[in-house]
Image (cartoon, rainbow, N blue to C red):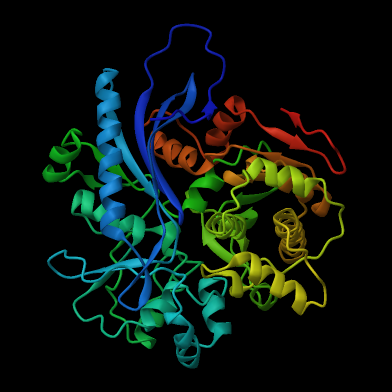
Amino acid sequence: MTNAATSTAPANTGAVPAPQVFAAVDIGASSGRVMLGRVSPSTGATLETVHRFPNGVVEYDGGLRWDFDALFAEVLKGLAAAASVTAGNGERITSIGIDTWAVDYGLVDASGELVSVPYSYRDERSRSTVARVHAVIPPEKLYATTGLQFLQFNTVYQLAAEPSLDGLQALLIPDLIAFLLTGQRRTEATNASTTGLFDAVTGEWAVDFLDALGLPRDIFPPLIQPGETVGKLLSSVAERTGLAADTRVVAVGSHDTASAVAAVPASAEDFAYISSGTWSLVGVELQHPVLSEASRTANFTNERGVDGTIRYLRNVGGLWLLSECQRTWAAQGFNQSLPALLDAAAALPPGGPQINADDPAFTAPDNMPERIRAAVRHNGEVLPDRPAAVVRCILDSLAAGYARTLADAERLTGRTTSVVHVVGGGSQNRLLCQLTADATGKPVVAGPVEATALGNVLVQARAADVVQGGLAELRALVVSGTELVRYEVGSQSPVTV
């Protein structure tokens, strides 16, 4: 068990009631964790990691899939660890919230059985269905209703690849976990908005699209909003984990980016954000979707956030490129630490070759360093076969991609932003944060690292009436207690704020 270095705690000036405890199940495409969040209005929120586990795709039955049985077993193990820790402290877990990546799902039959191992969005099966879907619903019409960025692995294209859906329901991954914990089938709205079958204006399912594609109208369970209760733990789960049988599972921003954006430590509205991890989600927060043709051609997405906000963003390549390079180098016997790699990359001069970091060619796992060098060669340049050079190319390319995306977001929304907040794992990458400040021409504020878990916990705390208010009040708790690092344009020395 390790403690997360995340706290959103204002100064404690006297005796206060013991904080309530919430469990956050936070799973990304490469790793997962179960964290305990302790929250009170006077002491803010602190996070403690009680269980970490790897996650990743496996080749199974001719495709790239998630080892869901192993994944759910780790969730149960983490919840058991959470129950043990809190019992040892004389505490009790108030509720559980679940967030994961988007678009993927498991198919469940009428009896509640998972009928197949869930596919990963990195599988190529939906590539061939895009044209078939667009022949029925043109891309312009899809976007005008859903506002969703085109990605070949969006849920709508994956469902079109299914041989049969008779008698089945699709549960998005966090909803599938919640179902196995509670027996209740729901679809949380922030993740529903990533399916390509959700109306961005009404906040309901796009029934006409379901009908047009021959999909059952009940292919997804009913919608639920962040803060609403999914259900209480099944007795079998309570017994296996040691949690109280009346422990609630509460819907949060179950798309991990929705939870991360809810915890962006912004004190004003004119901010941009980058949720930096396996992917980079780059955008601004709006109250209404932007469904223009210009927005569609720029490939921006309008996804739901907590409290009905719109996460207007574009998926940009992320630190997947770096982690895949490290994996390849380790297999080749090169095991230099990431800090050493970043120091060596920082020592290289600016102006080196760049790639399009969000090119689909980099989606699947493979020899990433060679694919990056091949992309550079295709551009008529040469990238030295040194890890430091490859790392610098990745980070320069990401920063340039962030700058282009933010400039497009401002143009398409008519808004200007004064600061860029970087949250998630990438907020620890000092070189990337400085390059981002220089490329965007805006100061970068980095942190918190565990923004997703914080957003998850704070929504649960508000549902339990431990804290009140809207996103501004939740973010104020983050601002007051998180150590943030600010990078000015052209600076060599970031400062802690």
